[in-house]
Length: 426
Image (cartoon, rainbow, N blue to C red; front, side, top):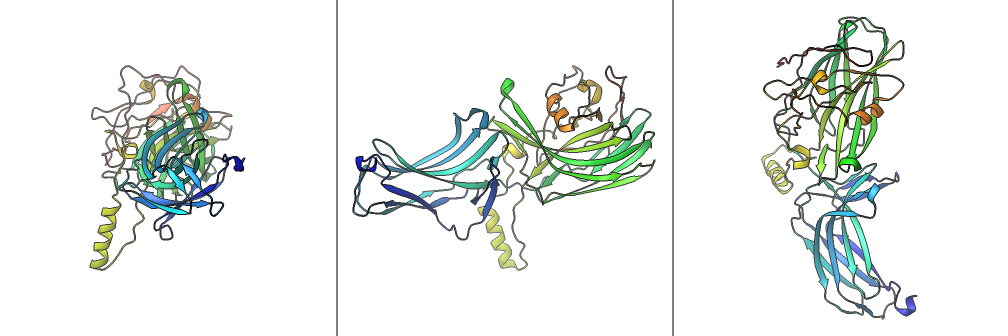
């Protein structure tokens, strides 16, 4: 077909300025492959050259113009026919004419906004890429090159610990505590489990990090839960007054920042799932949402001149909390689900100051907490006397979850009356 003029008679190559000195980031795609890309930040300039090479020297290439586009795109895997572009900047490189020799065209996207971070999940992918196009009458010649974008955040203004007492009425009463509610991607989760009352035989306890990905809205919403890591923190029967330490290192796992309602298409949230198993193989669990954020990887300098350089680097790469990562007037919602569906009027209580609602420990058998959570968390009825929970993000003054013990029964519904009061913990 090439002798009729229908084949591609030229090749396109996109070369970025400073590519040899720029950091790279790895992104795991849906097929399991790991792709390495050049790393950019919000507000950085993207520049380089588009090299057009004729396959046959001395030949002529007729075109209707040459252009390059900077595109931000969201791909929903259940709707592959439609790609949602939230960013598109086009620059013309050449007017219509004939190309008789190899040519390089410089391009420069000055201080381009990149408000979202790249993401590749189970049902959605967010990507940034450059697309160079030679427009022709029959078929265009195109080349796409992806880049990685990381969104940096500042340290949270308030990062209170999470502390809560939960239990089973007259059987088990424990207190768990995590040192923070917001962690950066290389952080360490430190906490403890304290047994206040033990009247059942517990043989095993573990903690897991669960990623919950939600795509779509309404009836077209899909939820995917993935267990990122699982740790056994106790093996054997505890006694009253025993304290079990928790220490989980996040740096060794493929984590992303918490993403909330990205362009009204998807969300990514993380939960710590505490699971206890008794000698009759009944499982009790409590899920607590945590916020993950990405901090800048800037080296520390010791002399004044280098400190000034560090300040300039911070000015060039501003650390800010994007709206989808760190906005909102309230703390992250904390939700727990057991083997039965119960209203939030029973398992939660909100203080007059708008603190995050408390929740109870659930019970389930023969099913993983991931499946139970994904099936019921979106169908919980809301008590008319309980205000709906609201979300907070990084740096907005999210309060710790400080509540009094919440007692529950292991029998199916209806549940016995539950009394819950809010207490203040410093």
